[in-house]
Length: 245
Image (cartoon, rainbow, N blue to C red; front, side, top):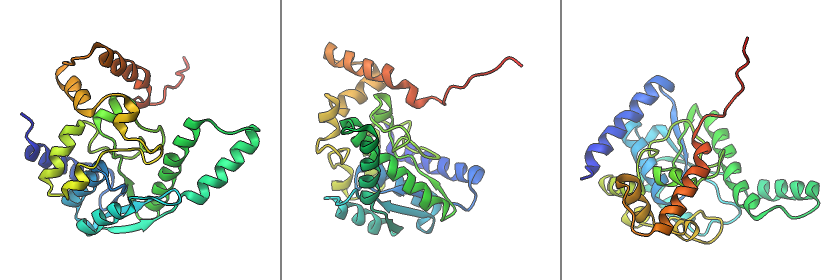
């Protein structure tokens, strides 16, 4: 049985310990999407460090339809907010890339560029505010590579990296966050589809498989296994050549 309070308290202490060793007195800086992961990460950091040491950054790519959810979470926690619109940078960079390519960039290029620009914005805000950037990815997303390398998969520390989606949901309720934000259907905010639409299976199925090894549909198991193996490189340090000197 997953003990949400026990794990939440342990994670809060882990964040405190991490900052004591890696950024004593520094601020936690994270992108706020209005979904469960950023909401839970922000609330954990507030409990660990205090609201005055947590900075939320909203980063619409032009217009973000659910920006009100992000602002509501920021107001609920009482943290400082910056709004950095990455839309103009996205349009300018994409135009330059496509001009050099002599053709349209691939769909995956367009999907991944915005998260990478957002991470650039986060680090800019962080370095100007004595900050450390929060990676808000969870174990379920990391397991199947559902993140953008050097985009949302980047950061200085990862509170949710060892927790499945179902466990993050339970901790969100333990933190007394607005339930509609915690249970909001996760989406990448880029394709108009939910995460589960894009993945081809539900997080409930994935989480059960991760924690127990049990899964009912062989085809789904094969799909998850393929995604896991294919994307393992995202979780490893960059390999480097070791010369024999």
